[in-house]
Image (cartoon, rainbow, N blue to C red; front, side, top):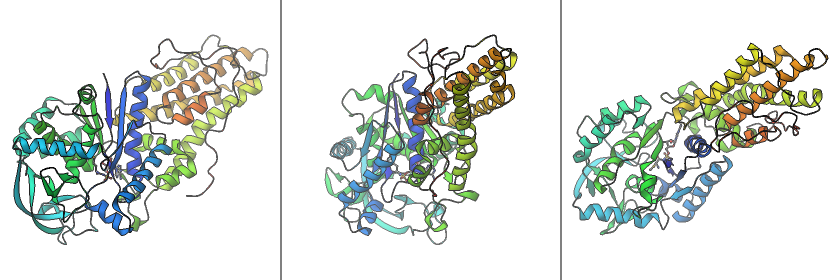
Length: 510
Ligand code: MSP
């Protein structure tokens, strides 16, 4: 089975922010986990470069739109590179591959008589790039997501795709597949949305009002609506309609924030059905990071967390770890620079880093840097070994975003248990006397092997750190090419390498 993991393609009307980093890191964690299980995976991310708000951002900076798009999308790519994201495709909707693809699809739907033209009047929120119902606006005409923008009244003629004819089919598809959307809360939300008749989707914008977009192939006065254009990237990335796309498409999983559930759970399926294409395999939805006190992050509140600044100070893996450990799937989670620093010190440096440093330096001091042999195991040894193994086993199969926090936490709990084990068994004292030395060897062996398994398990979350942590540990290959969590893979008598400091003391201030 092939897996095609997608992130949303992000608007480039500002620099990349923490939320963009988050979804993309989640996708990378899933891809790495798949990779070591032997599941071929294609990961796409990228930038959504059309529409009014990108155009406004370009003109606010006095730049030619294409130059602006090039600069901004390079910032997104640079952030994802810094975060060690192994994307296979970096989609850009202004690219020469994507534009004709969108035109082709619009033309196809037109030929099939699925598009119609009509005059529409409605409040348009440039932030959402969507027409809003009056009930979605507050008294001053602001939409909930964008209280700083007025959703002005617009009356214009446009092209539409009727969604209602596809509603029952989409609903039935979801109802028949309990696993189509995760977690459950979002499945319920989508089924509720699909319980009511749906309005036609306006799929064009007059080029005179929104020049930054893909021209309609049969009517140059119009550009394609930015969402219609953007969703198509999921097919463009696979070379649709060339036949090779099918196997990947069958394994398509869209990782999205809850803010774009309707576009992915209603409009996109309707577009696919209109095209005669199968629906994706799954929607993996996550909630949002918010500032402390549950407030939306915003520049004016001063609670925005800049992912690049966090990486500068603490490294990419620290941010990846915080994402993995502290996100919640079906409720928003608070994040702040203080919380990230606290997590770095309390969990990464004091628990994970400390276990690694003390075990390696002790083995160097007491056993000339060689992995000591393991003798008969006591119940305490067995207990700590099975705790580590059980935690690592949570990484034995493909992950879904909702599994990540609990699985990460289980590994951290195992690290705590290993730390307690080492402290109470005190192998450094045991090693001093001839009578107890072999027991000291066993404890050290068990702890080192646990340490190995902990970092193997955490590799998808903190790839660079795990690699550095594992480098000095002489390991035997497991029995299978596919990674399996397994105890007892240390080479007895082999020399340990020098340990590097995994989580240095915090240096620069954010
Ligand atoms: N361009 C559209 C998506 C088109 S996909 C065919 C878009 N772009 S966006 O820049 O607004 O990105 C939205 C996505 O960024 C969310 O769905 C989520 O994946 C991520 N996040 C943005 N803010 C977030 C948080 N505060 N927390 C977590 N993720 C968030 O919508």
